[in-house]
Amino acid sequence: MTDHASDQSASPASPSRGDPSRIAAIDFVRGIAVLGILTINITGFWGPTLASFSPALPRVEPGADAWFALSFLLFEGKMRALFTLLFGASMMLFIEAAERRGLNGDAMQARRLFWLALFGYAHYLLLWWGDILFPYALCGLGALVLRRLRPAALAAIAIAVFCAAHGLDGIGDLPGIAAEQRVLSGHGTAAEQAEQAAMMARIAQSMAQDTQILNAGFLQAIRLRFALAPFLPFKIALATATETLPLMLVGIALFRSGFFTSGWSRQAIVRLAVAGIGIGGMLTLPVLWWIWAHHFPPRAMLGVMDHIAAIPRAIMALGYLAALMLCWPGTRAHPLARRLAAAGRCAFTNYLGTTVLMGAVFSGWGLGLGPELLRMWLPAFVVLGWIAMLAWPAWWLARFRQGPMEAAWRRLTFLFVARPS
Image (cartoon, rainbow, N blue to C red):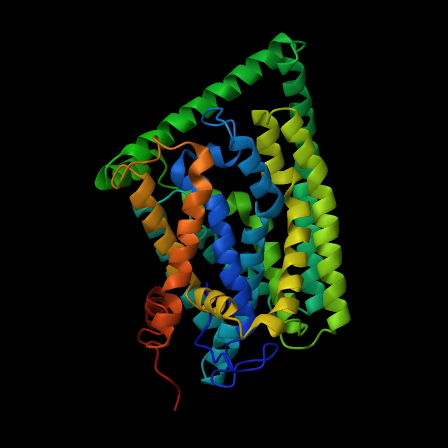
């Protein structure tokens, strides 16, 4: 989730003078990404898994549609994609740093991903169903295998896999969405009505299990996760591999092409920012209009969130990345930008810490506010999380080289590794 310590006085488009394994602009973008991810994850902390897919689940509430629509347009999938792009770039930074020490960069990165997988599974089992660390670790191994390909080849493979997988799956979702519309309009066949009823029964069962875990005590929640879904992190990794791995490959390709280190002209980055945000936004808005106009039908929402919106949000994430890289040189001295960069340096700790904080607010082992609060109040807790993630890293990094979880991850990665003489 992060690379090594940084020197904020370094050029924003080049490795830090104090540590060549950091690029300050990456920390800045990562800080924004980890804050943005909370706008989506907050619903998963508050309610059952499928609440993240629709404002009508687990129940229809006042104000829920507007908050969901805003999150869908600006954040849904885009912050995760941004984070994944940076993960690919950070893999290369880590490998280069290891090789400067005379170590085998690929072997050290594999060790690093092994520990990330363990952290991820523990994160799932102890705290929350929505872990992304475990999928990152598995997909990172695939990216490691391919990372020596030329940047153009990496990008071509990534785009082909991403577009083929999500395009074909999205097309495959359309007949089911059409059948659902016929059922909801009262014109469905008996078979279509039966399938819709069966899907709603599966949704109800899933929400009941999730609510049981959400309302349980800490140890009981762990037992339930292990008893009901011990392999969920593996299933999520497989289900998201055609998004996560290609985006990592694009991140590696961008890094190797010099995107983060002044290898691209400003004009090229401006074009990417305008095209990415413009095209991604124009493709997202009609989808948002349709699902809102049709009151977020459940089968359609599953198809949209998993497949149909995937390509637009990836395009928009690339635009965000370019726009933020353009913003960094002019804002790097601003106190907020420095706090965001510090939050990005401590993204691993912030990501896990946010789970603990929100678990303490919403879960049965904490304050248990999940069943009590309406969805319309979730933005207030997003702001609370943002304040928490921005408050401590600058103070900490003035005293320590890395965030606490970053330091633990690094020590485990280099455990029993002797530096070549």
